[in-house]
Length: 144
Length: 89
Image 1 (cartoon, helix red, strand yellow):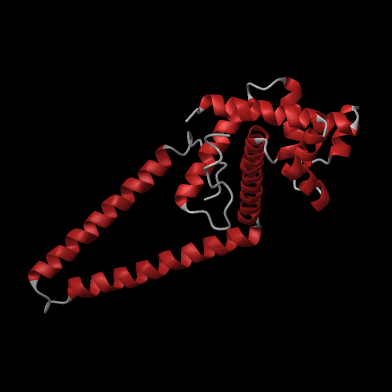
Image 2 (spheres, each protein chain N blue to C red; image 1 turned 180 degrees about the vertical axis):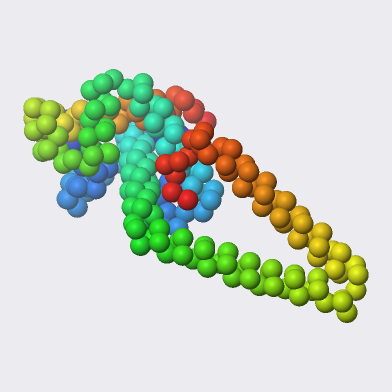
């Protein structure tokens, strides 16, 4: 078999477009040729890497398209908003009830009061930080 | 090709370790491609990344189909050698 034929068959086998007869032809030509066999393995490994690369890019693009769909964005915003409101109602109502409950031990009321103050301070810090970096945020293109 | 042969680069459900391996392999291939000749890099991109057939590449480059396959073989060999030189282990 000529070197040109081996090259052609190797390319086709690596690209998985060879017929079974062509694959058989190459395998019989490579038997007893460990150097060429190693070369075939190397080309296959290379193809596997680039296939994985392309698959990943396509998966990323599909994910990005899904995230950019209006329905997806609306779902996410509605879900987050409802979760925030629910948490605020439950947490706030529970805290107020416990704080006003004179039968509750003093240490419980003090603890809850301190926790409430901590949450408010942290919320204020986050809002202040978001406002201060608003103009210089390099990730404005990122869909959160 | 040492270094790439042992890496599990394609898996239906890759583990985190597989993904790290795959990212590293991709980075290495990307870096090695920078050292290919323009002709070899072009043929790798057309076949591996744009998934063009041999006939389409031949039409695009204005060469015979046999030349496309020969060039692709040599480009792969050059790339594989670059990768094995980089990681002789």
